[in-house]
Image (tube, rainbow, N blue to C red; front, side, top):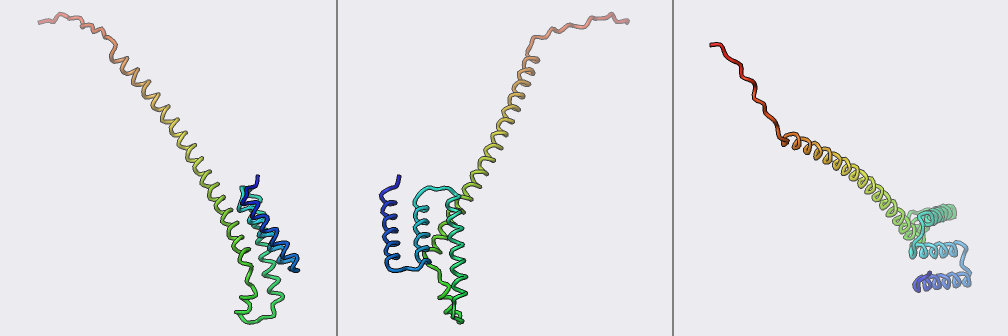
Length: 164
């Protein structure tokens, strides 16, 4: 179920895309807009790691391809002109950083969760071991107390006549 905010964002992106189409935007500009829309949808809802990873890879591939394309088409030779030529859409660069952060956060959370489960299992095993040891010690103590508290019959040794 989409929230009102998600519906609003989708409508805004659709209107911007329509405006770009009507203005005769290039296919690259339209692809940038579609990628931005997909990033906004993924960032706004809960989705699988595979979805985020797939979009991140697609975004990275697009940015690398655009950069390579700009290098091939670049008539500039000065450093400042090349820097301006290589400037990627800031929104896509930020989107790639956002998706990378989401993936890294997921990885860190997964590793922390795995580590805590391992620690929990180790501690439970230690508790079980200590409880068994405690049970054995209590049993040994009961035997010891029972053995030493039972009434003893002391016989006096017979007396032998002494020769004097």
